[in-house]
Length: 167
Image (cartoon, rainbow, N blue to C red; front, side):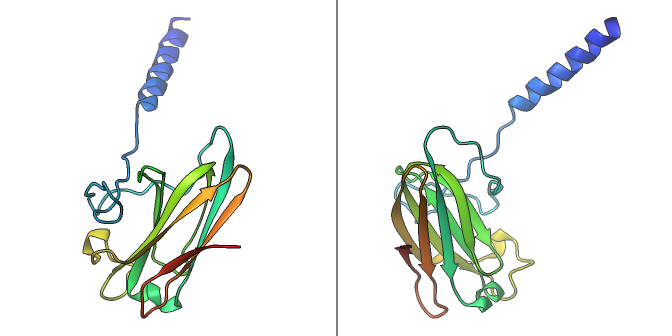
């Protein structure tokens, strides 16, 4: 009986310790939104596993139309910000096409995209070895309950990107 109590206490202590663990918040890159704070280029990006959302939710789908050769010269970034400019989702794409699909609470969001050049094949480059953000574009989108909000990003090789709400 005593050994069961010791094992139970050890299991509970481990579970409680794990509950206090938090993941670092991904901060916006300087210059991409008003009130943004500088962020280390080594900041980790949350995984793309959809979280459990409470209340009314919708689906946000973002697709980037760009040349296949982009992956040989630059890394594409996509960020979803809430109405206050706080980054909720941020992903980097070293391959083409860049696509993001996520469940989010119904509300207003800003989608931002940019590239950071790598000066050669990007596959082995670390984030701190990439260039500064360039070819930045963004759009505001309203996500309704049980709806899909689609955003397309047109990112030609020789110019800035533009965004549009998909029909």
